[in-house]
Length: 257
Ligand SMILES: NC(=O)c1ccc[n+]([C@@H]2O[C@H](COP(=O)([O-])OP(=O)(O)OC[C@H]3O[C@@H](n4cnc5c(N)ncnc54)[C@H](OP(=O)(O)O)[C@@H]3O)[C@@H](O)[C@H]2O)c1
Image (cartoon, rainbow, N blue to C red; front, side, top):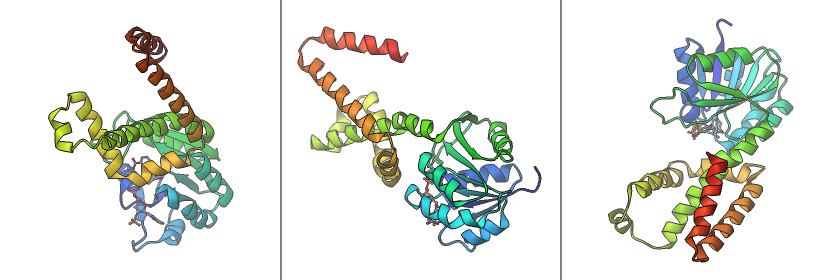
């Protein structure tokens, strides 16, 4: 497809800015908008064949409701939201355009994006799917297609469990009231690496992590499993019998690796 113009709502920074850079590298015309840009949502909808919603999760539904009805059926509406079920349903409900849910599984601050994974949830139409898939694949991304429910179920592990684990670590360390300098003096390389991750979650975009955890439909299930696992670990740790805990680790390793 030639002379495609892409409009990115939320293209001024973050993931929208990553996509703008990628599209520009492919010589695609890109228009971006944020809340204070000269171009607004209506201008972008008129100018572009493809509209991408890349705003914070809490603003996504509202933006889809605004832009969706402005698009004809030959256009594409795509989002970059970290969750897929709700935004894809919203896009299908509010536009006649083709719809693809997209979730890049990395953040915008990486130095080298090569070999990273991108999930696509094609939801309406086929005209734009090959174009976007090839664009990502030609730039060394791995593209996997799935449906929104399966995506969100996987993100309950990859993001909800993972970030809850980091949050528990940070909050538990804080609850010990150990001064940071004291922790630093006693730190191992393993703890230092984990503290860097804690710092990222607690200070870089707490809003994003909070939305990812509170809005995933499978969060309650994964927390229940996490609590049960912690209770099992507590019983093993307090049994005073190291062999029991070692056996549990070896049994789990066989399932994991
Ligand atoms: N960050 C990540 O690691 C990551 C990874 C994968 C997917 N995502 C997803 O990408 C999306 C954006 O996240 P992000 O981290 O890139 O956010 P971000 O860095 O905060 O950027 C948000 C962008 O949206 C614009 N914006 C905010 N509210 C808006 C509104 N009401 N109308 C129009 N534009 C608005 C902002 O511009 P102004 O402030 O100038 O208005 C900015 O350009 C989210 O859905 C998130 O789940 C994020």
